[in-house]
Length: 91
Image: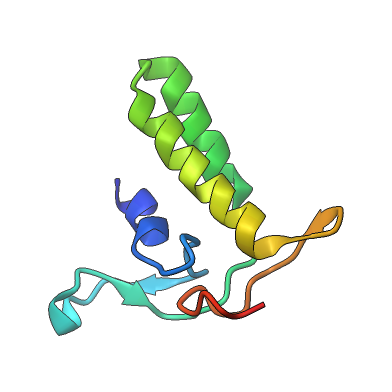
């Protein structure tokens, strides 16, 4: 659940490369770095969890992350890293 929240709480729907768990500003974690080099293994893990448990929430979470990758990282025939996951306007 925490891994998914790292994606879901960012404006782009993509997780930062690193986070800090410190409880500051009323948040349980915050972005330490703002860039993302993409982590497709998260989507793969959610796919496996869906097939092992049959719980559709894992499929939904994986689709959300994949859709964000499509929207913010797909460039032609390849995918690129994102400079700032907190800025949905960042190319």
